[in-house]
Amino acid sequence: MEAAARPTSARRPTPGRATALSQQLPLTDHPDLRADCGNCFGLCCVALPFARSSDFAADKAAGAPCGNLQEDFGCGIHERLRERGYSGCTVFDCFGAGQKVSQVTFGGRSWREEPESARTMYEVFPVVRQLHELLRYAAEALDLPAAKPVHRDLRRAYDRLDALTRDTAETLLAVDVPALRAEVNAHLLRASELARAAVPGRRKNHRGADLLGARLRGAKLRGATLRGACLIAADLSRADLRDADLIGADMRDANLCGADLTGALFLTQPQLNAARGDAATGLPAGLRRPEHWAAAR
Image (tube, rainbow, N blue to C red):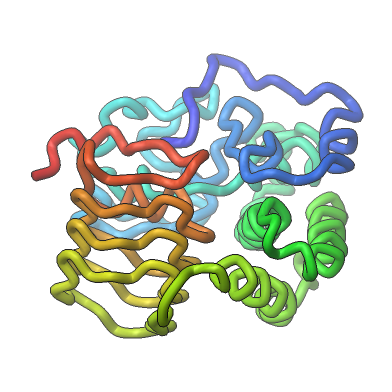
C-alpha cells in the first residue's frame, strides 16, 4: 500500500514504546495511527480480497497472498501501483492496524512462521483496522480546542479503543464493532458541531446525501456537513469546503481542483488519494498532496 516504504526486514517496536505514546495526548500524526509497513506482515496484501476491475489488475481471494507480495512482506510494485493497474491499493490505509496485529496481537510471529494462526490473523486484521480508524477520528476530535466540552468523553472512548486493540485475538473477534462505532460517533458528531459553530452564516446539511456526479463547482460549503455523503465523480472544483465535516464521505474521482479544504474535519489521506486535485487545492494540516494529482487538470 502507499502508506510507507518498506525496508527489507521487519523492525520490531522498542518494548514499552506504544504504551508510553498512548499516554500522551493523541494526535492525528501519532505514530501508532500511521501505517508502518516495515513492522507488518503484509496483512492488507493477504487478508483482504479484491476483484479484477479498474482498481485492481487481477482477482484475489481473502487469505491468498497478492502476486506482488515479496518474501520480506514488501510490495514488488510499490512505486508503480497505479501504472500497473493497482490504484485500489493506493487508496487503502490501515491507520496502523497492520503493525498492531502483527507485533502486538500475534507477538511478531508471522503467518508464514505459524501457518496455523493465519486464518485468525486474517479475521482479526479488519476488526483492528476499524478500531484504528475510530482511534484516528477520536484523536482528531481531541485536537479540536472548540470541542473541549466533549474531550472527557472522547478521552474515555479513545482509551477504551486503544486498550481493545491491545487485547487478545479472541476478545477482538467478539467486539461488536457497529455498536462501538455508533457510540463513538455520537461524541464525534458533537465535536463536529462544536468545531463548526463559529462558522458564519447558515451551514448546509448534506449528511448522507447522494451527490454522485453533482455539479458543485464553486459551491459555498464552508462548515457544511457531508458526513457519509456520496461524492463520487462530483465536480467540487473551486468549492469552499473550509471547516466542512467530511467523515466517511465517498470522494472517489471527485474533482477537487482549486477547492479549499483548509480545516476540513475528519478528512483522511485515503479520501484525498481517491479524488482528483491540483496544486491549487487547499489541504488541512497533516495531509499530503497525492503524487498523482500532478497530472490533474
